[in-house]
Image (cartoon, rainbow, N blue to C red):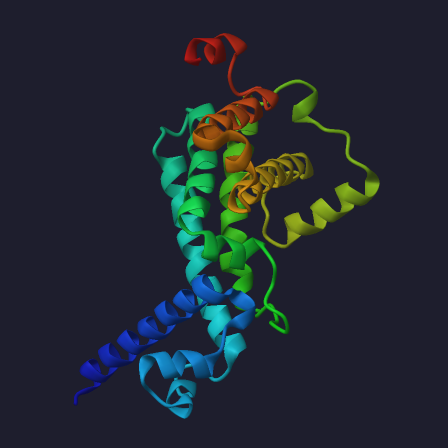
Length: 239
């Protein structure tokens, strides 16, 4: 077997291992993830699987990288569905993409932002890929602020000395926007995560049944207005 064929076979096996791991997470939860159980389902020995992933943490890191990459791609696609100077449209589309991706990939979203797997350690190589999704959100808000679309009190929130110092430190670590933009981005993320988590844990659907999507759209629109990205008249026209 030549080197190219060996590499293709290895990549196919890696893909199968991760697919089997996601299936196991879907059926039994992330805390039950077991390399030996994955090996049994694939019909190979545990030592054979360890040649691909040396331990559970290594496999979890690979799963997280896959999930973060897909999540960021969904946010980018939503953002890019609107032209660069349509700041309100980009925010709306990105927010809806956030919720839609999580609703369609609940196991992946939960692994990213839900209950961590006991004993799993955050690998160093996860840093850049984990940060990317937040940078997309931060960028949409930062570009709107730079264009003068975020105005009034919300544009310059009065931050405590502690928060401002922390945000300045994050800026030096690769988050290129002002502390005020980082605050707005974190606040938006907290809102989207709260809505999404309520949905994934079946609380929203219990209250709203088929009206969940209308609720999500309404809450995203509220965020658009709180940032000053759209006029109240435009909102009323949409209803």
